[in-house]
Length: 446
Image 1 (cartoon, rainbow, N blue to C red):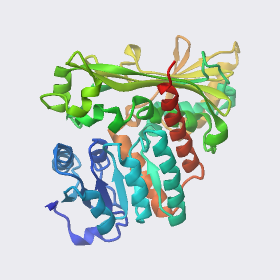
Image 2 (image 1 turned 90 degrees about the vertical axis):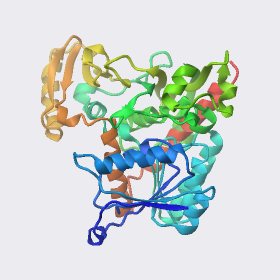
Image 3 (image 1 turned 120 degrees about the vertical axis):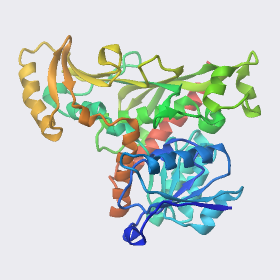
Image 4 (image 1 turned 60 degrees about the horizontal axis):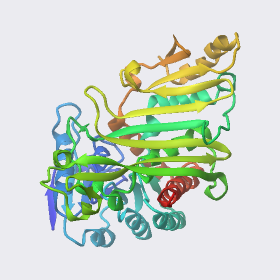
């Protein structure tokens, strides 16, 4: 079954738009966020192949909200194809050249591989794999992409958060940061912790979560889901523009996982369902408590440097707060720390905290900081209790939703140029090797 939801678009305006999107089973709101922005390279007609149901309905409603908003409305025209054979029809009909995947992760790796085998590029939300079997399939997928000269790329939005960008920039200034410590399992050189919430607002309204999002067999454990972002940032910041070999450079020290408990009433509030589906019954205790396997921690060595990545999911953030991020990079001269607590008004804030007693440090910092200021005009330094705080103008604080446009613009550039940095593919493999092997380790009896 095909349904057309058209926006007004002159045919001449479509000329010269080489990117044509096919969205497959968009069960996660990230699929819509890719279309929150318009792009001159992307054809405004998007084909959606998905089973009929609430996941599709919510996706279409989000796209419609972007088309009808008063501030910078988009102009997407949507062709919807439903039915149980929706993915088979993607492969046979191929009405575009880029498959967008952001939804139920149970079959995502299968969709990735089959799309590439059919000659389609793939732009996939994280996680691309949720277990070791999926990792083996992903290795094959990258080989197919290389053979067919196709692009397979995942959506790493956190690389575009300004405090993280500046943490990376400052870590590359030896006079300020020194060199990266090696650390220990008890005191890693790099720590990245994030706290997320099931009940949240997206695009101005309370997000409705599909029930499968709370099933680890469909969404994936927390240790292979959001932790993907943290592992990616460890690689991207600690070894910028360097290739990582997962077979040689990664050694796991420990991994653990634990559930978030959610009451039936809380479940109803975020899913709009009257009760737990049968497939969630295995996680239900005391009839009304759902145990969601959403939390995880990994401690590992990357090229000899100890790192910790941990993610926690709570049900709802306290009033006036939201998802938070905490990050430390320990250098021989200074620590670079991102905090997002009460003192920071819950806005990610970067601190430079010297670990050496050097009266010349402040002057050296001011001098070296000029190179960062040149790249990001308007940023400045302010004294803090332990050193300095980096002051960032609001114009750089785009927010999570805006970062999807940044990643999409990167994807378009790589696609049209026919290449991307040589380290991206091996580092994607390294990232998913880390998360999937950590899940295997966490599952082992203690």
